[in-house]
Image (cartoon, rainbow, N blue to C red; front, side, top):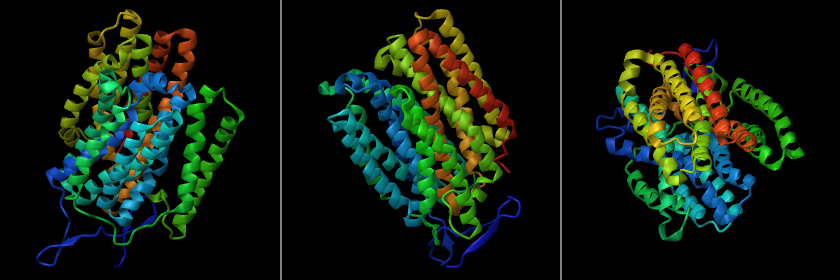
Length: 490
């Protein structure tokens, strides 16, 4: 099969591309295998499971601590192990799907996710749970990139726009549902099982999606790019050297090894950039092709996505902790308090395709501004009415935050992927989701640690107020920088 070459709009960089494998029709002409509505529902269900599980443990941590007698550092690892494994392997997962078939990797990633969810639910000790969570994150990294890749490879035009809008809605809604579902299951204490159903519930759902996945269309690259082993190793070292000490350093009292890891980070990042540039110059297949990252839609979109997802991840974590530890809402009450955000997010996400079609990239800065206003309103409400806050008191702010996040998040996904060629769908989706997960983890690590440090000296109210103020600032940055994003309609 001959290789096709396309000129990207990135100066003089020419990027090798191959065509996606097509199925012949009865006339002998190649046609793209289509994604049916049932197929779209299947891949979106597969996307929802890993995202839900990233957040579902937030409301269960006090119960896990009471049952397994875990230290603070171990509890943070229950959250961190999943996110770190997820972020490190996402790009590799997308590349493997391009090489071996996106439906095949979706299927096997879902199998592994189902099995590792069972392992999490049955974990006898905190250490076992941490290991199972890391394995679950690795399975998610195989599963989730295939969703965007399948959408990119099997849809086009307005159909693709609607599918990407639904994917963005699924991602944000799943984040909220994770905490709602987690709170409900923990509060129900089914058969005295405590926190374990938050993982075990994935098993029957995963089995159903596995049956449905057999009907998905298969797609892969005719000339797959292969796996960049050195790039993968350097990416892992870069992310681990940054995320592990940020998440564990404060809880452990900043031992020497955490400082040493942070010192490694800039050198590992520089080495990754150098290796990827050299590999592309010599005709190799880098894990993160610099020419793809130089696409305006990708480069600018990812830069705006960093503060956005960092703000979102830290808010969801700190909000759940404050409601339980500071206001004593309990896991179910904390989940219910997120309902206005979830309803607003889902409603606006359903309208995002029309909004982007009419207003283009301007939807992102509007979303950032609405989110910032919602955070300021939440800050004022908290300071004025603590400790007598109710779900109704919080609802107006939560609605605004849900609207703002829906406008920004769904549109950011579309902008980043709008000019990524079909055959590089795995690379594009892997880069976007790695950015998302790394930023979420960074938000939890930095602002979560800030909240924990301040809560001990200032109390829950003032610690929460400081973090919400920082999140409002990050949302304002999204509103300002989002004005320079390229138009996805062009």
